[in-house]
Length: 392
Image 1: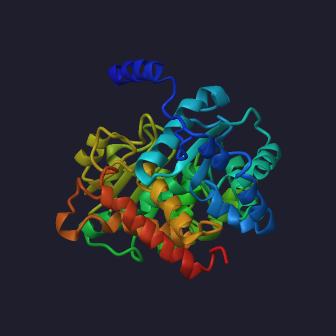
Image 2: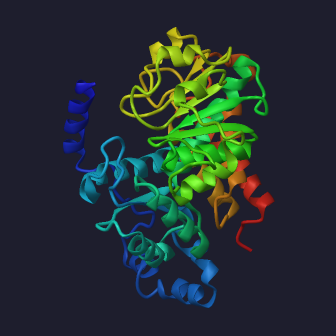
């Protein structure tokens, strides 16, 4: 691992940034200059002023995303600030371009005030076709996203929440095929109720899971909690732990069918995995060190294991979701990203692998499967139209 860090540092120094801007219009003659800039550019300006929706016809707005962070929750590094977050935002912009040919601009804000972040994004929104929020700490990220979704007429998406949830559901769809269980019958234990965990729990419920038990650093979430719950925790309580289970994580995992971890290292032992139901599905995704090591989960009897790491099978990687999701939204001219659009993306990711090719070590496609983005685009666009969230 140290070797990859050194190689990456050298590469970044050579690149001096992973992205740049290329011009579509050539400016080689006086006429070229007149068409691209003054005086010719005045005409599209006039048309957009008369009909604001024409901005999608005459500018790059319909295929651009702002990748916005405040640097408060970067990878596994935490609150490292906007400057140190820039390499990650550049990387995200690179992935948008490489996988879905979307132009993305990294924007790192030197403020942690949610209201100020919201105001800044609203002020710059006319330039962009979508907003991808990135590496903003919870629960502030939820407040920011929800406000922007209400007040903007372009897709707003916090990838750390919903990208993780989409790919987790995709992995679960195929894992359930491997162990021959249905979504309605399974018991799912989730460790972590922050940005990713809360989104996963909500998407599990939307997918049809009935029995979900959620844990965080304070223990199990239930309606009988003796402490004051955050607004996110209150929402989770409404869709989970319907039987008011009051035990520990180890006790909850007894007889569970699925464990999903987006929390902290070494919370799960081999004994806890061994106590799960036959055909156990284990997704320990904490980074850089997971809730239980991949090999330990296998040795303890898990039937399917997926992690957030690239050095093990079944990497649950957000890059599988967000490029195609945004491109599908743009294709449909969607004004927002709905729960059904997210679920459509998850199902598309899962179904790209034929049932005949599924194995316990192959439940998630490679991000380099070039058919994947096209399939996601089609299914997400259909869902946007069905939900009626397209520009008229």
